[in-house]
Image (cartoon, rainbow, N blue to C red):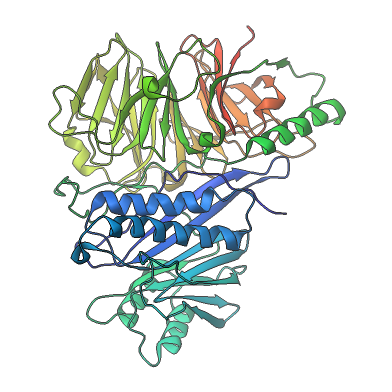
Length: 571
């Protein structure tokens, strides 16, 4: 079955070295729903040679490639990866037309996407791909008529290829900027056969295939997972034309699922039929409340760009990954659309009292208080708080220098800002006083004592008075108390099967909501896992994120075409 992909890549993660001629790459993962048949993760891998000195041009290039791939609705996978390579070409060609010849940039590229157990590859110029499958090595080179064709006036010739990745030991290798020694393929074969670690294999291959500098190499395993946010070193200057060693990407959010408007309509009809016909849909002993959702914010295909939702006292907030923009919408209105009046902040915005403009926002979280405020973390580790009263404050949190990898932001039971550091394996709680986040934080969870908790998989976190509820990127939800007791929270089975959970939210009364995109429902449970009720509506098919108003009376749900709002029946 063909998977239809939508747009936006909030997770571009360039891997850069300090020198301006070092190739760079990006690894992006996106969960998508093909309801009612299941959920899967599509992964896009990009290498470009050479790197770009301009940070803005580099960001634009990666964003265009991501949009070229994920915006190719209805295309085959080979066509989609080809569109990603051509998107990079058009960006560079536009750039080269506006600069002097000495400032023009041309490049080669390798683009790959994983769908199921098959990798689809597009190569432009001096690039190559190797497939290691069942102990055999296969290879495909780019067409070398021009070594760096991207950015020239004529369109590049793209070499297309595919290879299976079915066994645990299988690998796909993307290479740019290689010197190609005579025994290159033999060395690649030896390294892949003897090196199970993808990171170690990348390092060895980069040295073997490099010359005066290492080649750019990306090794992909069948279940390679895109890393979470990589934070900018605090010593890195923020000037727009200075390349960053390890610029962060937006928070990994496995809730980001794609579908077209037509697909959403089809899924809704299927859900309605399922509700009418399936004898397993509702058990007689369960309470089921039907919702009547309305379209609060109509986004169309741009809904796929939204990474985060937040609900405050005065507004509904969204973080758009492609725009790098935070928008605010009225809580009570319907059929709203993004426009200049909804823009709250974006990269480059100057706020009163700030020493520098806002960098690319990567995560948002609403902190209730008097007044409440929206916390925005950007790529440079700056914390911006936008108050309900219209004021703003910029905080350089001293302990942010120790942050390693942002897995999730959340809110604690007392209104704290929760920061889950995936790489450091700890959950930090920053108390909030008015519109000020207080440093140092309190450590709620520590990997040293919770060895069984998979911190690197956490995608959402919610604090309760005596525990923490976390959703992992595999669709499981865990409640962990201060003693380290781990309790699994599950959806009630439908048709004898239990679905993966796409999002969680506090019900504001001491319980939790669990979103089930495959059965078009949101399930309310107590913190000990006791089922309270199911909230159902066909429009919830493929739901990717949920939030609840602070008074607990309204449910907001991000779906394929926008943000729905529904009144929650009283218990």
